[in-house]
Structures are given as C-alpha cells and as structure tokens.
Amino acid sequence: MTPEQACQYEMPFGKYQGETLERIATIDPAGPEYLDWMVGNISLDPDLQEALECFLAIHWVQELVDRSVEKHRGRVGRSEPIENRNKPKYWWEQ
Image (tube, rainbow, N blue to C red; front, top):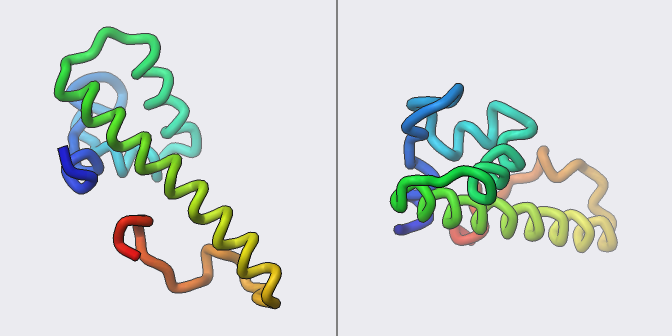
C-alpha cells in the first residue's frame, strides 16, 4: 500500500465511518492516538490493519520531521511558528 492510499483509506465502521485516515488524524486532536489504539486492541480486517500501520508510520515520521525542522530552524534565527512556514504536506514530498 502506498502512503497516498493509506492516507485516503476510509474507516469502514465506528464513529469515523466513511472518514479517511488522514481526516481522522486532523479533525480530532486525539485521532492518531485513537488509530494507534485500534491497531493494538481490535481485531481488524487485514486491509484496514495494513492501511493503519502504513498511515501511522507516515504520521509519526512526519511529527519527527516537523519537530526536527522546527528545532533546526530555531537555531538559525527563524522565529515564526512552523505552522506559518511553507512546507510540503508530507515528508516524502520533500
């Protein structure tokens, strides 16, 4: 499964039924943790399991990249918050 496919995978059940994994992670501050919980606590369809594992790997790597960039740019005198900077949406687009 590609990163793009994982991001666009739609939740087949529950309170987020029909929402993409990417949307779940952005509309709910606890979304990524909820998806993490699902992987470890619910018996899932193999396709959903694969999509969640791929998406979560992408999500947490992106978090690390964002933090690293913010820390690095902070050292060289950039003061604006990372949210205000122009940056690719995902780390693999850099």
